[in-house]
Image 1 (cartoon, rainbow, N blue to C red):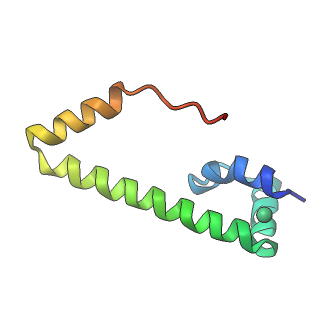
Image 2 (image 1 turned 135 degrees about the vertical axis):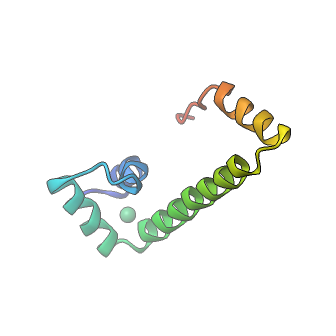
Length: 83
Ligand SMILES: [Zn+2]
């Protein structure tokens, strides 16, 4: 069974439904048993949905400001996740 650290490492991929088979079962089993990771997963889902909604709103606004925001996002290097 996954521990919480292993779950959080896999969580963002789980949102994208990239896991199949036994790994997906392990993730769901851990979520059934661990309220901390259920909360973490809920917040991760909300953040993902909020980000997508904001991006969609900016995308459809078609203003010079939205183009500038997208340019900044595309040009920004990804942040390093390790502390
Ligand atoms: Zn957990």
